[in-house]
Image (cartoon, rainbow, N blue to C red; front, side, top):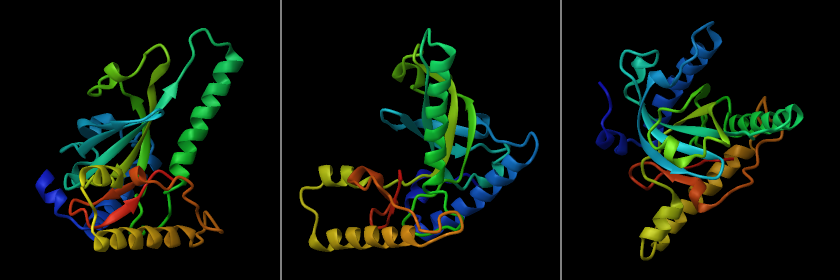
Length: 228
């Protein structure tokens, strides 16, 4: 049955990992099948979670009856990479803009796209291209003259406990035990990233470690690093 927000908030990292891993397999299978790639139509987009200079994030769930209907027990974050354009640009200038966009998407996918799942890391589950014109709050948050609605969407597991930046701002004072718990998990995640893999023989460096790139599960006790 479709997962409720309350049920999702109660999941620990292992349960999130297990559901995310199954969805990742389905997304990879769809991407490798001719005509099988997923689209926004396979998700129910609920709300805008946040926006930055180059990306938006939306809370979504897999649509019952769609290509991902077997994963209605999963909540995801859809990270929209803004596809910038320039009115009146020459062919050479537009080609340069496209090259930057493609590199940005490739970098987003390469960072957490580790072959095997590791705790305390927000993994990329898959990605697809689509037109975002109909998404909630999209049109009111972008300048259509400079942003192309046809862009790439990256699928990530949703961490409902918010980020460390919000926790710090909304908590009068974190206890020593809470601070030690957070630091222990962050160090553990960094060590796991540095472990060599087939795609990265020397491991992975995060390079942007900060409170708003550290996300919590619903309990706010377990965390994972994102935005490599």
